[in-house]
Amino acid sequence: SHNCLSNLAPLGCLPLLHDLDCSHNQLRHVLSFKPPVALRHAKCSHNMITEINSLAQHRFLETLDLNHNRISRIAGLSENAALRKLLIDYNELIEITGLGGLQLRYLSMRGNRLSAVHGITPLDEA
Image 1 (cartoon, rainbow, N blue to C red):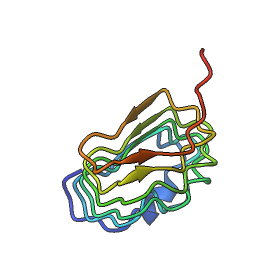
Image 2: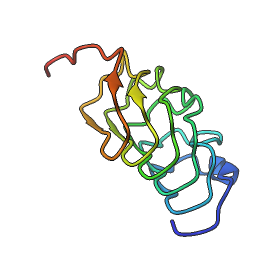
Image 3: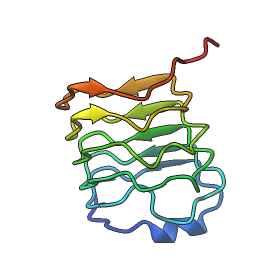
């Protein structure tokens, strides 16, 4: 956190990495590296991310913090069945789509310019 990183590729060599804080950097892509098998929590806030690339390879990811970026739409998360917590506050979202099928337990979208929510299926009660 609080560096000038623009690439996380070397982290793919850490197969037991469980938690990652890459906040306050210069990243333009979300977790664009070979996934550590154990990665469960990623904090990618305060970067220059404009879109969510496919995160299907991070299949065990449970928490994703994308607060304070420049994201204008949600995509790339449909195959992340383990994702339970998504923080996407203070971005450039106008509408929420792309969350259908996810089993989120916590979703935070404060500080966006939201006017519509589409494609979110009812959550199963657990």
